[in-house]
Length: 288
Image (cartoon, rainbow, N blue to C red; front, side):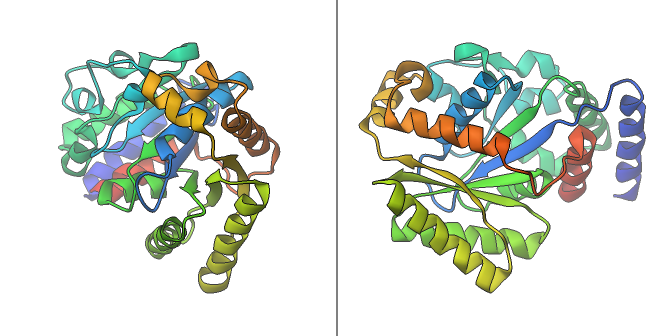
């Protein structure tokens, strides 16, 4: 364990000397339960950030229900598995979707992270470090609920966006997820998005309700960055396998996501990015 951590530290130092320290920010997008529109949000939020001039890479980190490429109507031959098994480089497994969005498809590679050999740790670290300076944001669309793999990405990320809906079960599960993550790592920084709200008032009430509970019982701040209106164009975009912002840019939901991205970029961050080397240190430390 200690030898592997030391090897990783040496690797990080070597690559830090080669690259300007442009701090890439890591964001995990998660939810307490499935079916709340988390992946749709991850995809369209990423496109919105790009439209504001940011360089974004989306990684489908949902092992059981990987579907980012399906939502875009694209397919990928390679994923993280091929990277950790030394079959492909990081550049080989990055695909390009609508509006030039870069993404890495989901797959079993995440499971492999918990049982990497020393050589594979070095390989994985070396490849991920190549991303230094290429992206402003790397966004993980994690699985719903709190699996071991999801917890690893959340606790290694700079921030976590929790997606919920006004439904009581969704609210309860979102709170439960935050509580569980907080018990693992109290330093995790959260933000919240309320999806499928009937109107602005319902979205704000839902956000205020969850934020009040997390503050009172967990002493966790949960700022809301906005809500997305319930909009039939979302399901239409899924059926057409095109991102909402691309196929229905004037829809209420699309405008909501653009507003959320703008709000996210404008509000002061309550976390400072440690960049790729900080992310690797936290992620691989937790997998050993």
